[in-house]
Length: 606
Image (cartoon, rainbow, N blue to C red; front, side):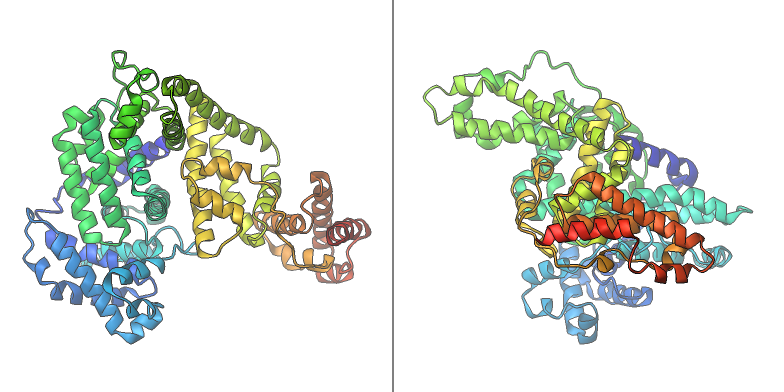
C-alpha cells in the first residue's frame, strides 16, 4: 500500500499539478464547500437520482438549513450538519415518489436515529459503474469548462459520489480539485484524449483503492467493538509517527476513530470540516509528531489531508531505554491489567507497533489479542509471572505463523494459480454463485500477482493488507445474504484473526449441490467463439467452479482433464467453417469429456 500511495501521489501531483490551487476551504470558500459537501451527501444516499435532481435537492436543503447560513469558520459545524441531515431525511420521506424510487419507504416509517441507520443500509457499491466519470466528448467538455468551470467539478463530484457511496467527502473534494485541474490542463493540449488518459488514470486508481479502504473502516466500526476501531487507528498512527509520545497518539487515535464514525454515517459536512480541523491540529504539532508531514502541511486544505494520510512512516526512534520486556517480565503487570486495563493494553499496542513498523496492522493486532488473552488467563493464577513471562515467544510464534501462511500461499499459487484458487475457495464457500467465486478469486489472484514477487517483509504486508479488504467484501456479502456458518464465524469472531480463520476453513460438508446434468454443467455456445481471451478464461473458471460444487473431493488432475477437453472442443468448433453446426453436433459432448463429467456427477450423487 505504501508503494501504491506514494506512486499515485507522485504521478498525480506531477501531472495534475494540484498544488497550484491555493484556496482555503474553510475561510475563502465555506459556502461553496457547504454546497459541494451537501451534493456528496445527497448523491451518496440517492444513488438513482439524476444530476439535476441532486442539484435541486441540494439547493433546497442549503436554503432551508438556517444554521448553515450563518456558520462562521471558527464555529462548530455540528449544528449545521445535524440540521442538514435531519432536513434531508425528512425531505426524502415527505416525497413519496422519491422514497419509493430509492426504496426507502420502510426507513421512513421509523424515527430519525434508526431512520439514518436504515438509509445507510441501502448504500450500494456498484461494480458495474466505471471507476471515474467518463467524458463522452472532450471538445464539448472543454467548451463547458470555458463557460462554467464549476459545472465540470460538480459533475465529477456527482458521478464519483454515487459510484462510491462510502468514499469520504474530503477525499472526493480533493480528487474533484485534481480532476478539475486535469481538465483545464488537457483542454490546452492538441491530443486531448491521450492527455486525459495519462492524467486521470492515477486519480481513478486512487479513488478506487481508497473507496475500498473507507468502506472497510466503516465495516469495522459497525461490526466490532469501538475498541477494535481505536486499536486499528492507534497502530496506523504509531507506525507512521513512532516518535510521538503515547498520550498524543492515544488522543489522536480517539479523534480519528470519532471522525471515521462521522464520515461513515454519511454526515459529509461534519466529515469535511472535522477532517480539516484534525489536519490543522496535526500540522500545529508536526515537530512532535513526524518530520515526514512537513511538505504536506505546506499544502492548501484540499490536499493537506490526503497528503498526510499517505505520508511515509517516520524514522524509528532509539527505544533501548524502554525495553518491551517490561510487559512480560514486570511482576506488577497483573495489577495494572486488573486496575487499568484500558491504559495497559493500548500502551502495549503502542510500544509494540513503534518497534515493528515493518509488520502489517493485522499481524500486530494478532499479537495484541494474544497478549490480552494471555493476561486474562495468567492473572487468575497464583503465579501469574511464570505464566505471562512466555509472552515474547508467543508473539514471535504469531508473527512467524502469519508469515508462514503467506509463504505457503504464494508457493501454492505458482503456475496456474487461478485454477487452484477456484478449487480452493469453491470448496470453502460453494454457496456463492460461479460468477461471484470467479470475481472473488480474481481479486485474490490479483493480490498474489502484486504481492508474491516482493521481498519478504513487503510481501507479507502487501498480502495481509490486500486480503483484509477482499475478505471484508466477502463478509459484507455474508451480512447481506448469509453464506455458511464457517464464513459467519470468521467474519464475526475476531477481526485480527479473520484471515487465519478463512485460511483454515475446510470443505463445507453441509452444502448439497442441486443435481445437474452434464449438459447443464457444460454449456456449449457459439458465443464462446466471439469471446475475448479474458472472457473465455472466465467461462472456464465458472465451469470449474460448478464441477467442484458437484464433486468437491475430485482431484485436481480430474478437473484439469475436463477443462482441457472443454477448451479443445471450443477451439475445434470455433475453427470449423460452420461453428454453430459444430456446436449443435457436439451437444452430446465428446466421449472423453462426457465420461469424465458423468463420472463426477454420478459419484457425487451416489
